[in-house]
Length: 171
Image (cartoon, rainbow, N blue to C red; front, side):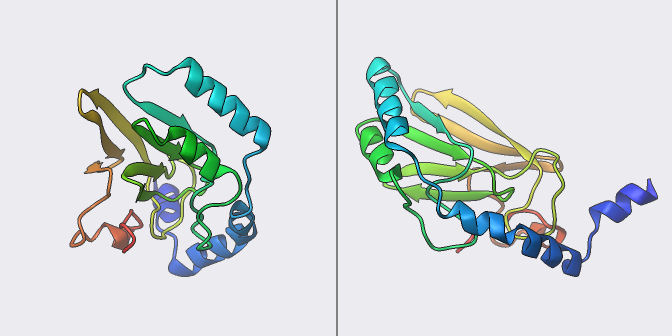
């Protein structure tokens, strides 16, 4: 049990070392692109499924957000957004191991954190699963944490969860 506790409470210096090691991957993330063939495939799927109440798109790495850069619209992702423009949708991604919520054009864009993988203390780091309940008004989204439940925007500003390495929304 002591070994487990020691692993859970890494120092800030350990966290910074981990972030430094992961930086090249996250910098590369900003250069991800969606090919023309992928855009065509996506267009075909949307045309085949015109009469849905809501569209959920799942991508491994967020093509619209990188925690390491300000670049938010690389490559063909704007074409994907244009194909979705006339329907309600939510975009989910992962890869960064940090939670990030954003709204673009009135739609939810959510990058999930981890669900039990190794994590270090940093903004957006948390172990969670996303619970989606579909209603007539659209999805209701909640994050089920190892130690509680928060809504899609994360804990309130006055919550001290950041001190123990859990998510705080970016201003």
